[in-house]
Length: 224
Image (cartoon, rainbow, N blue to C red):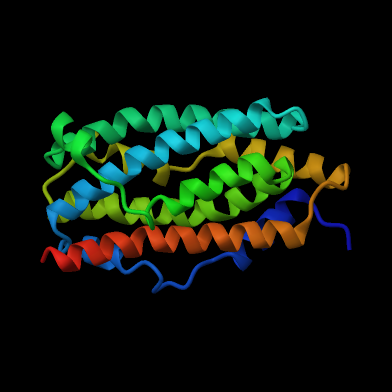
């Protein structure tokens, strides 16, 4: 059966939906039980993730085998990461992160597994497949960010620009969705979508995403 890009994207997102209990840190933040030092660690880890992902997306834009539709999608992602960085700095400062703490912080390996795999995809994945796999994971990430933004306002006394990083990723992104659909459709039309590879990529992304949150949950428990 021939499917449209939207049908394939929705089907992929559904298949990649994580176990609702996979993120053990989110419930702590949602009820205000996570330590502020854990929020600071979240900001510090995200500094590395954002920088690495932006470079990976820029590499994908410039790959010689990338099609114009996929390149446009990755360009928007790279621009979004640049915008998110400034918002993240505001959140980090509110958590007590200064330049000395940034310089001294040692990233957790499990938190950095996700951007490491995104970099692998940037080098090895078919661009259209990477568009689809990443898009399937964004719904989960956006939901996490929405829950965290609400909790920061409700339980931690943060608001306004301090929550901007999470608000940014929680908000609908119609332009990004349009570009994702265009890229997926172009891949379908050219026979470049490998659904087996897409699901493999997506499941690994979800697994590394879970490791990110679990590592921070473990940190919270150790320092309680």
